Amino acid sequence: MSVDIQRTARSQVTFRAIAAHAILITYTLIALFPVFVIVINSFKSRNAIFREPLSLPNAESFSLKGYETVLKQGDFVLYFQNSLIVTVASLTMVLLFGAMAAFALSEYRFRGNLLTGLYLAIGIMIPIRLGTVAILEMMVASGLVNTLTALILVYTAQGLPLAVFILSEFMQGISDDLKNAGRIDGLTEYTIFGVLVLPLIRPALATVAVFTMIPIWNDLWFPLILAPAEETKTITLGAQVFIGQFVTDWNAVLASLSLAIIPVLVLYLIFSRQLIKGITAGAVK
Amino acid sequence: MGSLSLKNIRKSFGNVEVIKGIDLDVKDGELVIFVGPSGCGKSTLLRIIAGLETESTGSIEIDGDPVNGQSPSMRGISMVFQTYALYPHLTVKDNMSLGLKQAKRPKELIEKRVGFASSMLSLDDYLDRRPAELSGGQRQRVAIGRAIVRQPKLFLFDEPLSNLDAALRVNTRLEIASLHRQLSATMVYVTHDQTEAMTLADRIVVLNNGVIEQVGTPMELYNEPKNKFVAGFIGSPQMNFIPASCLKIDDAETIGIRPENILIDGAKADLTGKVSHIEKLGSDTNIYADCADAGLICIRLFGQHDTEVGSDISLHFDRDKMFKFDKNSDTIN
Image: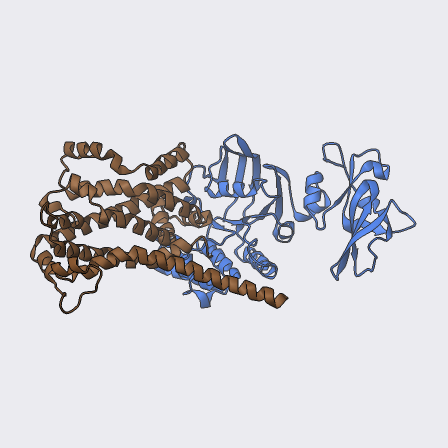
């Protein structure tokens, strides 16, 4: 009897594990499929793309024409550079200012602490794109249109609310005794922040970095509106030159999109080890 | 070294006053222990002395100098925390020397002081390790070492033994006692454990609800408690409190008697009851007796005794060792 129960229990556990994995694998396949299609088609000739979009490139259909077009257009290096500058600069500012604000909110008791925290949290709920017209007017007034600075400022504002929210939760978990020990040893508040607190919330910083980085890299909206000039185009905007009203150079579009995945993938791999720690921080002690 | 003087210290968080006027003088080289139940304000008071918390009113003098408003690092104090609070990314040596490095003291002096502290606490073999590679007791020793290296006027200990297991607690307690003798330093120590207070302190300050109930040497507090609270807090097992009417005594409200001053004596029974529980500790035996109106009474007998749970018991109280308390719970002499 009890053996039976045990057996049923064990088979239930196995069944659940299989079901969970099946769901996760299905989801992964669905999520990766478009990326897969883009990458394989970027290596095919134009005819092959339309004839058999789902087949892998073979000797007959293999073509690097798209990559040649993209690389021959010298601007693409510049677009890449712009995207990198904007992403890395915004990321740095979001992490730095987000962590500083989070430290202030979690560490100091002051009038309006709660209100400030709530005000910052509202930013998570209201999409920044609703303010596009006002942002454009401000940028025009301050002469920042068609500069990378405009994009960096907007993305910093876009990323800060979530960063402050996540980081202040983590900072509350750091022991007060540690910070007080630092104060007694004569560390300034900035040293306590930089030397004691930041290293301890590294997993949280990596989490915020990934969540902030990807929307910035992929954004088409703000580059199109605030910085569409040739010398400030980002890679996502740059890829649009191959999409014409009448003719679209699909080889080039797919090649440029495939290339655009690489840098963000590299940044993700750098952060991912920390990210996993961050996600499991609460669950597994 | 240093003395400490507190005058009328008060502290409120919003509308709640947690420290309600504390006056205290700690002499040079004295080990004073703040003891009291949780929430009595003892830790807050220590943090006010350290400068980690600002007092609402009152003045603090360390070594004769007023230190109100000074930052913690300027007060010439060191603090040892309950959670050790070591810097996780620094080695033992760097943990101990960080304070002196911040103060830009010469390298040779830092080396010398770290060497002195580490040999005193037998940490020489661990200087290059990180806190994560140390056991709890070693971590607390590093924290104590970090405090010694600063050569402060005043050592502050915030429940330093609470995170250690029982055996280590006794060892570390002895170590702190010998440290106090060797350095003859002024120390203020906070604990909720009355055994720690009794065994370590030159003087004990009993705090309750943000006021000082009594200050005195451990034996003064044990022998002459000023009120019912101190009488109940000092001594283990706790003093028994019995309504005076049960013993037909008119000039008091409550009678207090320590478990070790009760005799089992059928001939001169002051109270009778039934045994409800026995704790055999080997060296002594604690018997809990349920005595109708008087409630549960603890009797401490030396040596080993066999008594059945549920059996009848007659108790005789040693009249000379009885404490009398009035309506306000103050001791009647």
